[in-house]
Each structure stands twice: as C-alpha cells, then as structure tokens.
Length: 321
Ligand SMILES: Nc1nc2c(ncn2[C@@H]2O[C@H](COP(=O)(O)OP(=O)(O)O)[C@@H](O)[C@H]2O)c(=O)[nH]1
Ligand SMILES: [Mg+2]
Image: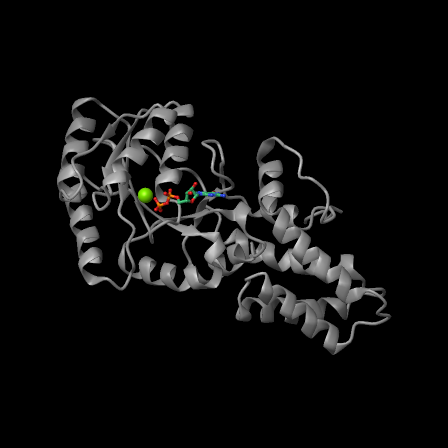
C-alpha cells in the first residue's frame, strides 16, 4: 500500500492514470480506515460510525455513505474475521455497483449530415477550455477532424486561451472579438465546419451560474442556433465540473442537468483533491453518465471514465468481482 511519503511515479495506461489522479484520496481513505482499525479487536457500532464519517469526509455524500455502511454491516455478519481489508472490499463492491450506473457506455456514432456538435457548459474556472483542448487532441488521435468554436465572448482573454489549446491540439479555432453574441460565433463556426467538412465542432462557452437567468437563456439560444444549422445538434452537452469543489459543485450540477440538456459529465481536476469520493456521489445523484475525467493540466491528462479502474485505484490491492 502506498504511504503518504511515497513519490508518485509516472505510470502509463488507464489504470495508472486513475491511480495517480486519486492518490490523495486513496491515502486519505485507506489511511483513515487503517487508523480506525488499529488496536480494535472487534467491529463496534462506534467503529462503523467513524467509518461512515471517513466516507463523508471523502465527499461521497451523507446518503451514499449511509447506504454503504448499511451494506458493510450486513456484509460483516457473514465474515468470520473481519479486518480493514475485508471492510475495504465491502466498500469497494458497493461503490462499484453505484459507479457502473454512471459508465459512459459505447462512444457516440457520427451523426449525419453535418458535423457532430459538442457543447461544453459549466461554472467559471471549472476547466472547460482546458478540457476542450484535451478532447480536441483526443478526437484527432482517433482520426476525426475537429474545429473549435470560441463561444466564450465574455472575457477578452478567453478566445486567446482557446487558440493556444487549439494550436497544441492541432484544431483550428473560429472566433470573433470579445463582447460579440456567442450564437453569432457558433453560426460562423458551423458554417465553416460544413463548408470544410469537419467531423466535430467543440463549442466553448462562458462560465455561468445556473441561477443567472439571462446567461441560462443565452445557453438556450446557443442550442437553438446549433439545431437550426445542424440537424440534431448539439449532439452532446458536456457539463464540466471541478472535483475540488466537491459537494458544493454537486448542487450546481444538479441545476444544470435539469435546465441545460446535459448529456454527459466531465469531472476535471480529480488529481487535485483528496475528496475523490465525489465521483460516487455524482454517479448516484445526477443520473448522467460520467464521460471524461481530468487528471492534470497537460493535453493528454484526460481519461475516459471507467468504474473498475476508478475503484481499483482507490483500493489498489483489491481483486474485484
Ligand atoms: N490539476 C488540474 N488542473 C486543471 C484540470 N483541468 C483544468 N485545470 C486548471 O483549471 C484552471 C481553469 O481552467 P479553464 O479551462 O480555464 O476553466 P474554464 O473557466 O472552465 O474554461 C486552469 O488553471 C487549468 O489549468 C485538471 O484536470 N487538473
Ligand atoms: Mg474558459
């Protein structure tokens, strides 16, 4: 088991990326579970309460933690010699059941005619623009041509930031000057994508709070514009969430999924939190598939979500069913 002082080593592969991204959560969670069991001869109700607290502190959410502990309690009744490892196994099994519901399933098919339109939405600073750069590169590596649309016209620097990512990812960017109507930029981008036969257009948008009616109306207009120019667009609406904001972000996300037609989630900055249990709370409470996870600031720091890898990364010694 990894200790607090171990330097994370660079690892390749999906599992390695997850493992590195959740290392803070793993240390916090398995460390505390180990501490709870230190010197305890039997599993007392107090001990289970401490365990529930540990899960809540890892941002799994009160209700989810409660359910998991109920499961652990009945699981323990079947064990002769329960210890920390057995308990971790019971927790892992339950997490996996919840997370499998949120797996993204098979990738989307290209929709004809016209480009696939992917709209990104979310609160300011969560990682939308960074995610677009990563996703652009990822889709290009899969052989798709990708055009980026600078729909965040709110800040002067936003289009420049997207252009930097576009250059890194090898994706052209359509932009206008700051202050212009995002729907007008989208119009330009979709016309360009159709004329030049791009497979995918990824649209950046200004960060917005779910309770700002004007900005949410603007999002509706963006969606309508997309649908008028490309049948069925936007084909995906990705809500980008910041893993570091934990339970607070969850409430925002709930509002967004209710009003913005969100089809999938991107959980950015999973590498930056010791409260990675938020993934489980999201899966349980939002009912929207988690498609991508951001695991760092570099262009290849995006992994597609996979429940098995996530749980195995949290409890690395454990064999899953
Ligand atoms: N550690 C880490 N930082 C990230 C990740 N994604 C984005 N960021 C950082 O979060 C900050 C805000 O990102 P940005 O894409 O500008 O957010 P936006 O306002 O939603 O477009 C930047 O400093 C990014 O480098 C991630 O997966 N991990
Ligand atoms: Mg941005």
